[in-house]
Length: 449
Length: 182
Image 1 (cartoon, helix red, strand yellow):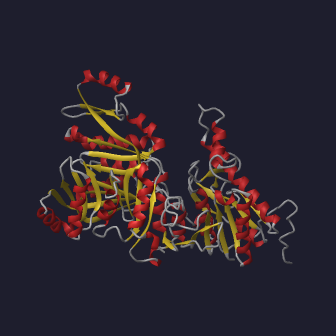
Image 2: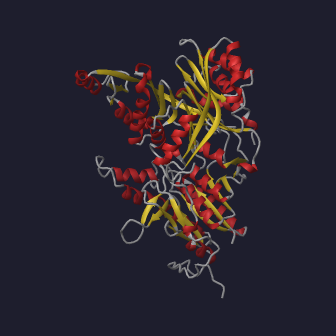
Image 3: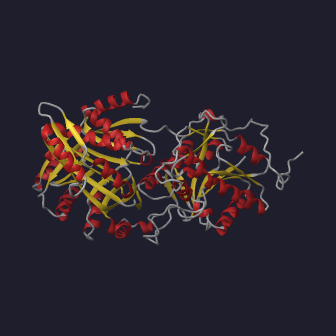
């Protein structure tokens, strides 16, 4: 049997008109002799009635002082995909295409027991296969699976975390040995830059799994890295296409199929806060321990960090703006005692001005011996712009070209971070649009294919 | 008799799975996703780290001039980091003498240290695993290792350190995460 997995994201199922476009794509695939397996996300985005965030908000409003149990949150969130799948299956039926909606568990998706961010352990696609054999188009609820270890009768519903519907589609494609997995969205494929910033940004015909995973890692919402990883592992052809056009889209391929040096695109993250502390005021013998303690605190509070920068005398990292109040709260007045021949207590200040907590701690600690202050400098209004490339960044002069492009146009670069596939610059948030446009032009990305 | 796919369209659907013999692998035969957290450690050898001194109050164009000199000498750099008194970066160890010659010729105060390694800690989907990057960094530093530079990509952390430290860090991470491959 020739299977084609077709995943439709929130914007593709948002309105009756969008759903009709999506349904016609499914019917067309069927007419071409494929067994389409549809995977759907919840309808719409934040603020719309059945979107995942809206459902979570409703749950949160029960009592703002009580965090919902992760299990209950998963059940609530999963309703969005269930509504979407039922509506889509009914639409297909109305168009004369027999269809059946399946929850993730009914599609055979078995996960571990981590609510809210479950990993797929295995898939038994028997139900999906049987539905296809009987002429039905299965419409599978994306983003969800089941965990069988919960102790209650029946299986526990789990959700797969961010980008979960992409992961569902890719994993189903792998389990079915599908001819292809197609991720439908509201853009024509993977672009060389955010089209809101660079309207003329071309769509790439082909990119590698690693490039698209890096693009997603650095902020673009094209395809989730987990989906790319599964497709790469099982060698399943993966496409990113538009629901609203017949353009061919972007094919995601293994590196061996796309050799050659190239710049792939420019991407950017959301709003960041960059925190940096100079350890020159700390005793030499304490510096490494202080670094470990600060990262230990960040790990304990499960803080996601960007732009990690660690040197013999400094620590720097960025966090998402929405996380900053929590990070500030965690770090401010943090007491780090260092034992040794000359015991010293370090007191962390994470705000520009001393807070009451910091002042109080300082007074309380004073009788205990030497108290040294570690003061973070905080840049609250920055963001990250990144150049993604393949076999290119190691060329002499690339850093220079990136920095020169930005700084000669008056955009200060506060820090950089690089890897095999990307070179990122921390810049003032106010300059983001211009930075993306300048880099796109400087690296001739309008000519990319 | 051929099945009529429309027979259930107007009535309740009952999918009876009678034939479980498919050409699809049984569920437990396929490991779809790698587990959470660290799953592989790797060492790349043959690097040198460099630090270039600039006036603390130098403007960014001074930095660009220094980078231009490196570019002119066809020296490829990685892990560029700005510091309050200059910048630091990493080069292939085989370029270290050319780097020293270039910096000396251009009168930049500098320090170049050879025999550096990049320890790569692989972990899928790091961005969505809250606290994972911090945990790995914290574990490595707590093992007594000095991380000199860092970089990251979607599935790995890159940490520059001395060869001895890299070997020590690998052993420590394997103790903490016996499931990882090295």
